[in-house]
Length: 148
Image (cartoon, rainbow, N blue to C red; front, side):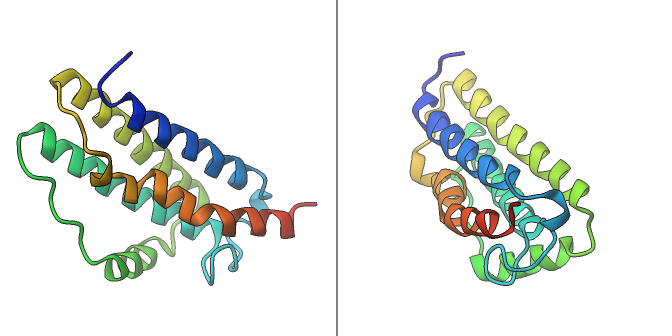
């Protein structure tokens, strides 16, 4: 499918692939170990990414509905709340949420294309492509430390 949001979708896909490549190199037995990004484990980072992908999806859906993209909530408060909410989740549950929220993000961009709604990249890139890049160096460094 070719659409008006293809350049944005392409940046998201490219940065997603880099992020997933870094995570895939971390042995699953080490993905709940603190230290992947500060005190966070890979599992914590994945839950964090899932939350912000869902937030970006909600903003795209607002734009499709003809509404303003809702304001992004206070980052640090949301990050702490969401990390605590997922702390008892299994790695499999966090990975499933991540897969679901990322698929929903891509589907929302498809829906925007179908509706003829161009998404201004700054509306979601901070929670998607740029966000993935923000965590990539820490995850690559962790992967390199723990890979056998």
